[in-house]
Amino acid sequence: MARLISVPDELYMELSKLKGEGSYSEVIRSLIKDKSNKELVLSFAGKGGVDEQAIKDTAGEWKRWSARYA
Image (cartoon, rainbow, N blue to C red; front, side):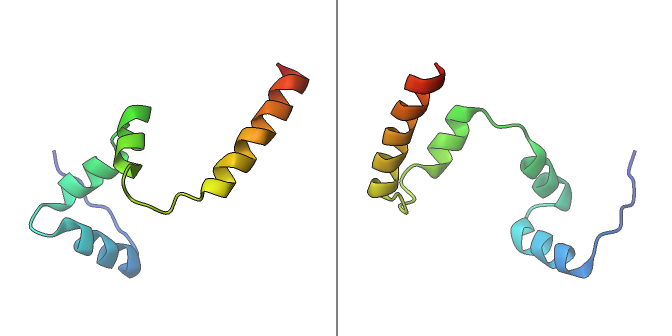
């Protein structure tokens, strides 16, 4: 059964861009689909933007946190 929903114009424009040749239902379905952690990591892999210094800082913070609370 089909339902009608109302969305603001700016959201409609974003959905239209994402839609391409597909349907709005496909876009919405893909956006709300639960993804596993593996899928999320693989979707990020190769995108660049990884700050090695931030990773090193996080590792140090993790060690301090785990020594204190774990």
